[in-house]
Length: 494
Ligand code: FAD
Image 1 (cartoon, rainbow, N blue to C red):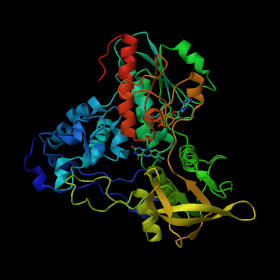
Image 2: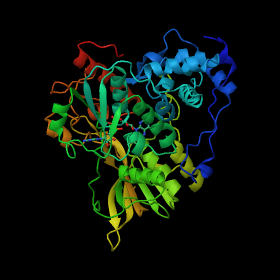
Image 3: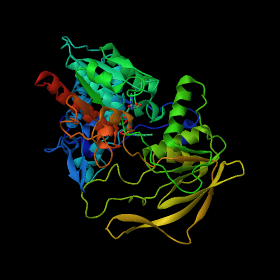
Image 4: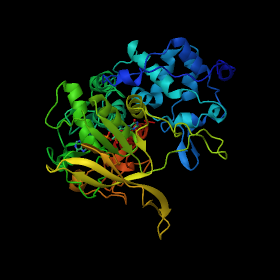
């Protein structure tokens, strides 16, 4: 710990951002660079605690907290404070294959367990991570490091999201020949076609890292849906082992009256076609425009927020985002000594943009849609809503109960369903004859990732259900370790 008084001297400071009304005019990232001296001061705020919960992880209010990949946070905070950026990058890469992804999109559970956060705002861990890795790329310190020896074993990784990429990177490091199959036209999974460009740049962050993985010897085969374009049996005969990292991409639907109307889409159809249009610089027949429309987004998570930010950039006429859950508390409860960062109520980037344009937070909490109303052409024109309160049913389960007299009708020519995901799509799992868990995810134990078929492993959202990029990286690294152990009898992978 270089500066014992850092946490007393410096206040928490994040980089400035382009104002919401300016940034909705483009698709680029909008954080402005922070001077190096300010970053170093932020590193100095780290107290190098005896038990760094940010790094080790802990359970706070019944929820796992701290960094899921055990980033060596106090070490690299201190190295940044001392201006030792290259050493900081090395420490960061020890536990995280892709800090440029987590440094941009992770909700930073590490900051929620920062000990400084007990009575001060926590250390800006996520932003320091982002700064370290961006400097690494700028300085040319991040270069391909192909393995010096090959084992002669071949592994197929199905799916190129963060779990598949992390698994591929680690297995390649161990010397195995890795082929990644991806059904989309570009690799990256939800890093490419879920999270929009303004949050995670596709060329400068996602593809730059994937190109490095290619240079290290990993083969990527896109436009290939395994189980359809490539028979699943071929995998088992052509490869020594198979890692499934196919994500949890089956969307939750809302089967209410009027669901068949045109103008009602799943969020991922909207977001995927939009990113394709941004990257291809032209729209295709799947493109869904929000321009000039009243937009209602149903669902309040990251996916919903990305629909808000995307609709704002299209130039929608109005926007409402419905959330069935209550508004989270703005302050931590009196009996909780831990910071609730980042769970405290905050506007994410999309809501900030909508509020700056339309004058108010677009979110309606404890509100659900009851019916879609259409016009004479079968096009949606309104969403009927009602407010709810949460009660319990006979089995003691929480259920939303409608409050009579709170009905509303919202104009809407575009409705986006962003209500989460129900596990992986099943054709490939069925073709391979894999067992599922009660939530319809592929059954494979955490820590060993083995499915019911020897040599076939599963990791990421398809195993744990919809989650976070950082958990996908955790699982990708873990599955690589277990796959390497299966292939070689022992493993040096962490
Ligand atoms: P995915 O990223 O879903 O990748 C799976 C890949 O497998 C896909 O590319 C799919 O095309 C491919 N595939 C599936 N079946 C086949 C097949 N048969 N053959 C070949 N390929 C196949 N998390 C965060 O931490 N921060 C965020 O800000 C955030 N924002 C999000 C925004 C949106 C819109 C969404 C939907 C999710 C967001 N998440 C966020 C969650 C995060 O993106 C996921 O948890 C993470 O990407 C899961 O990684 P994965 O590798 O398991 O699966």
